Amino acid sequence: MAKVLVLYYSSYGHLAKMAEAVAEGARQGGAEVDIRRVPETAPKEVAEKAGFKPDHSHPEIEGVNALPNYDAIIVGAPTRFGRMPSQMASFFDQAGGLWATGALNGKVGGAFTSTASQHGGQEVTLFSIITNLMHFGMTIVGLDYGYQDQTTLDAVHGGTPYGASTIAGGDGSRQPSDIDLGGARYQGKRIAETAAKLSA
Image 1 (cartoon, helix red, strand yellow):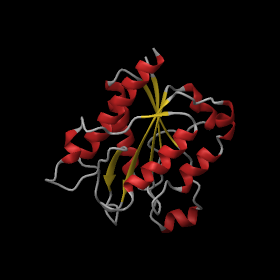
Image 2: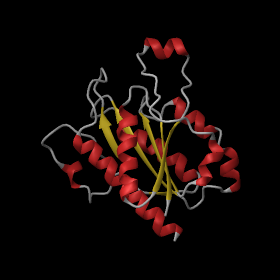
Image 3: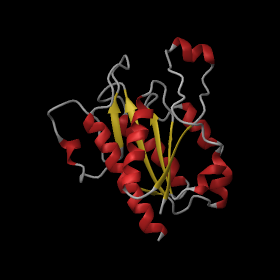
Image 4: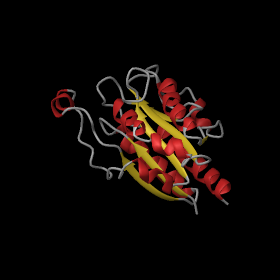
């Protein structure tokens, strides 16, 4: 049985919901799954002014040294000006020792994200996450077109071949749709199945 980590950062709760869907899919793929979040690093006054919702949905990860315990790591983070936010970047910046020892080489990785608008940088943000994972020597699994709902035009929704995604709206009022959550489940399942094959 593959062991999968769903690791995320969420300012307003959208990525926490997506993380749960990714984890659900990974469990459907036969994996043992942990959901963890990275610490909030924004100053309290900045977070309050921006209306961040304190995230207590899942426990914080114990640190970068927990990463090698997993066969697959699926990373979720919202976009900040077309890249992953500083909270997630700060976490990975502490993992130089893992890179130096090749501790994550050959593990499976994937990414998911959220943006305020349809064209708010989803694919670029996913690539900023994927780039980190590839530098750690991980094998990347995206959201392939086996999930055909991502190609529909009947409603506004997320979904890219690089990873599951959702659209939050400029005021954060839009919640992940059934299509968005379905893509997250699909990707989680595919990653779990791939990890099981590679670790067999």
